[in-house]
Image (tube, rainbow, N blue to C red; front, top):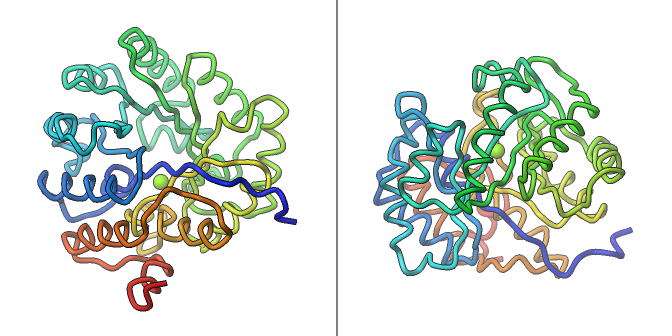
Length: 306
Ligand code: MG
């Protein structure tokens, strides 16, 4: 066991979008820019920064155009992949307006979840995605995909592996370069992760997927280790574990980038992260949100330096 670990892994930082979107306190444009610059200084080169959604729907993301434009003109972020979430053609218009180069589209394996989240069934959302990806690719924009509820749905419970395969194939056929597999409610366990990955391995290359775990039930690191054992090398996380869980109030959402760092770093796997600088990025945003981090390692590092 653990004899074939990779030398390095890739981490996609989702704190500024997925994290902040689920935080109640609204963060100013200036503080978002400081946070993103600090994340980049900490070695994170792929950062999900904003989403182009209707302002009244998600007020935290209402400054998307302004934020992206300012980030795009920040010299320190020149070689950074700044990813923006785009729900539909309207969102893509905004993305095109400010010269976005990387977007993400999203759907799920549960119709009930998708209806409640974006008022569309899975098939309806795939039609929207098809329109978005087509125009995005014509404009040389790279497209990442998210599939939510891969390991369970807050409304439907268990979700279908066949449906997962169908949706992943559809996204791949459309030209999405990578799909992030979301454990939306943090319900996955290592055996299930192994079953899902072995099922997908029959149809897809491993590097077509990134793993997006939530730590709601404290299983994220166990699930990440299982994924690693099965050859997965891309993981999504958010600095400090930003973003609560809308399906379990008061509980953790995204696994913290710090916890990933410690898991990998302690086993000699390179993440490219400077932990002192990452902790600085996390501290800066937490002070604006007036909240604590659920990350065990972040707290241990702050108090012991290791
Ligand atoms: Mg998430």
